View (spheres, helix red, strand yellow):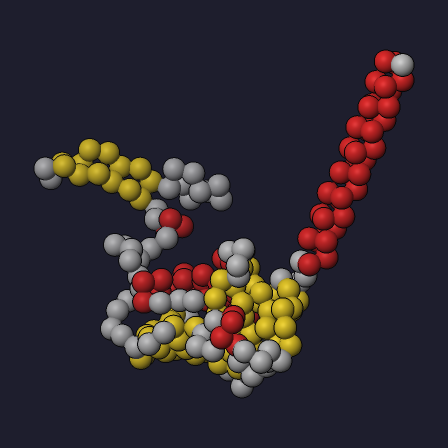
Length: 208
């Protein structure tokens, strides 16, 4: 009897493990089904010529001049060119992760009654306008919608942070407005005497 009881217990445990496996697999499949890749915008970044960023009471207008962006309204400070280009690139190649609701009665539940927004005007007359609301309850993304459409989507969390730009994020906070690729020589000087100097190689490997 003891042997049969042990066999019965093993069978029950085995069946429970099988059940748990299929439940976990079904949940994983549901997560995959919930995640989508919905194209919002697919535009040419090279044609962007004007950018307007609205967040709360702040509105910043920037225009492109000689391949660089200049702030023409909303403040008097140097612009972080890399951050501005990141905003534009992400809007021009924007995908949603899920369609939440079409024609919602209450945009406030998504924080889209008074959203942050990014508007880009292009040289061919095209305009891209995206509005970003609150974080999702799981903190995995943000609610967003096209300004002229009523369908609410979720976008990736990092995208929401980029598009909800403010003065802090677009201001140039670097002491030197150069990238590591621009640097070709580094020297350290103390009391008027050079301690050491290193120079980047002219070879393609770019070694120092």
